[in-house]
Image (tube, protein in one colour):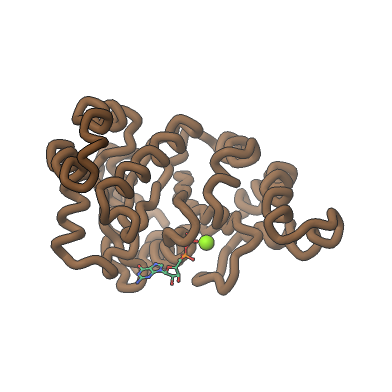
Amino acid sequence: MINLYFIGSAGSGKSSLTGAYAGWMDRQGYNSVTVNLDPGIENAPYVPDIDIRDWIKLKDIMKEYNVGPNGAQIIAADLLAINITEMKEVLDSFETEHVIFDTPGQMELFVLRQSGKVLIDSFDNNNSLIGFLYDPVISKTPSGFVSLMLQAASVQVRFNTPFINILTKSDLLEEEDVDMVVGWSNDFSQLEEAINSETPTLRTQLNQEFLSALSSFGSSHTLSPVSSTYGSGMEDIYNVVQQMFYGGEDLEGKRMDK
Ligand SMILES: Nc1nc2c(ncn2[C@@H]2O[C@H](COP(=O)(O)OP(=O)(O)O)[C@@H](O)[C@H]2O)c(=O)[nH]1
Ligand SMILES: [Mg+2]
């Protein structure tokens, strides 16, 4: 079983991608299970197979602890750990090769508080993979792009699992901007050049040496552009996942097993 976690800043498209990717898998004949870990999700763009809201309700927490919505999010993040065993039991009742986790809206609640790490470890760290989402509007400027690389590196340090980088909502960018951002992700000289012209004062700090050191965290592998709205790029995610876990072996056989 492969556990794929979509992680990224608030609004980067985690929930939409969970729905779009699960839908794509389904149409290909691959079985998957979706898990919503965001107790504050609103207008979920998919129907989760397993839903943290069955255990944790923000409204109840606000009442019980007498806190506002932000405080409730933090308490909810900590309560996540308590419900892992039960969630795991439910998950075990599904027979599937692929589990897709939609993580809480505010990335730091999952990444920095203890329960996110506890959850990934208890759901089998050896078969886990993080899909780190790059928001296109932030990625479009060199300084925004490097900031996201730094975030990705911190996620990588925290969870220490294989990593794929995804440029979401690619339909919001001009094609040439998608090419430019993808270019930065696989050629640091292009990125360095862009940084130099945007913020010359950062040229000494953000040099190629620094950028390639960042890449050793696995945070700068080529970005895969996707659009959940148009369903594009889903196959690329699937292929990268297969590549990582099965060395690219064709999974037609596995599909037939289902
Ligand atoms: N144009 C476009 N908008 C998207 C796409 N994916 C998500 N969005 C929008 O971006 C906003 C945030 O998406 P959401 O999936 O809720 O992000 P999350 O907070 O990371 O879960 C919503 O308004 C979505 O409709 C996409 O591929 N294209
Ligand atoms: Mg969401």
